[in-house]
Image (cartoon, rainbow, N blue to C red; front, side, top):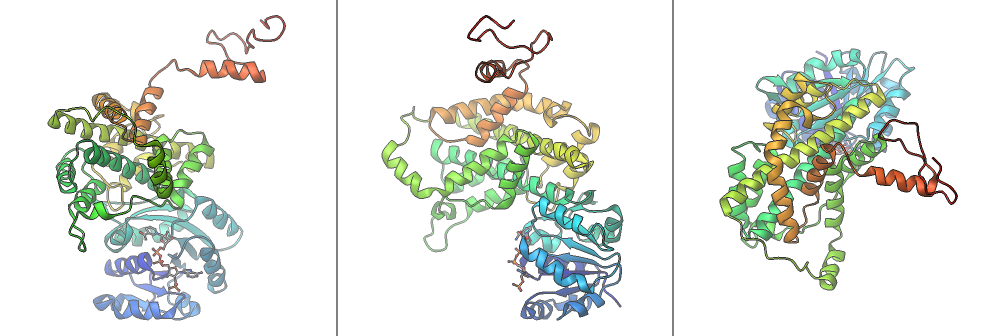
Length: 476
Ligand code: NDP
């Protein structure tokens, strides 16, 4: 019996995905560049061995799969994917589908898809979220490619995806780079979400002077409410853990320098390219960059000292904790609204017709940003899939009005105490800018006209004008 699907790359993600596929009753052929990995994988597959065909050569691998062959490539992103595709091509036949499931830049995915346009082969760019655990037991899967190729893989992918109240967290989102673009923005939102949680942690630690186990309890408590989510759940657990070496809270002995890899940065770059303000994601990426400049920060503290601020104001513990919870929710709304706005702009730019309610739906389980909150976003977009911005949907407008006061109090309290909250502050400024019909860019337009004769539109609708700042007489 031939395999239903093939998979190349038995690293952390690939081997877990392969076991998941086998466990859901799909026969799978596997191949890895280094043969030892294939042998080890098969030897450890236990009862699932009967569903797995381990292959030592690409020729043998391809022959083991039922045509048209879907082949998942789950290897190191970048050049290795192009190399692997070239090695694979000679063995493939018409209708076969190469599926890149790694964290590819969607521009590479578009290029790979295009390169096969005039060939009988096709390509799927597939974003997979959920880390190792997700890959093994149910990830969220974002698919981009032709509808025909999606039909061939729909059944297998549906069987292995996470489920939210029975709904599978997998969907075909559009042509070529759609899946990888959505995965990139998922990760950008993940950056913002994590940064916002870390800023709240900073206020609890450095403002309210709570210990890690105490802060753990706060997050644990919030996880039973509206902030209920995977990231809050793991934050509670992380803060409760003790270092096996020193016995101190684990977080207290971890260096405060975070790396940032491709997807966060790509989200910011693509948002800027598309002309969409994604200030929460920008603040999160910048926050990680500053965090990684540890040595410079140590020097700067010696030279500048910590800001000469008011002591952290005496705040009524209970009320302020409630404010922190609401502030985090408000800020999250800002970041998610921005992420969806970036996707809406990309959808237009690349002709993808990205289905916003479906995207929110498949993020409700399996992925890193999974949460109750995404179910509310699903409802809002289901009612109004083409709304300009999530925050003007009735449900989220009400939520913003309810929580933005808390965000304002938290951001101002943190500012007065000298605690950095760039992502929380970005969300507040975003709301305040977006909701204000008369902004201040009239002055910028005047300045531009003054030094560059750019001209400006007038509020009274009279034709484009110049201001009276010419060296001679006024222009109008
Ligand atoms: P690993 O480092 O565990 O595995 C890397 C795999 O890539 C190995 O099978 C390796 O084969 C193979 N490989 C590397 N270079 C080549 C090459 N030139 N040709 C063929 N095969 C090659 O990586 P992960 O499983 O963590 O990640 C795989 C992909 O999944 C990446 O794109 C990653 O960004 C993405 N991803 C990872 C997540 C995670 O949580 N780890 C989550 C979501 C996506 P060999 O054994 O021969 O070296």
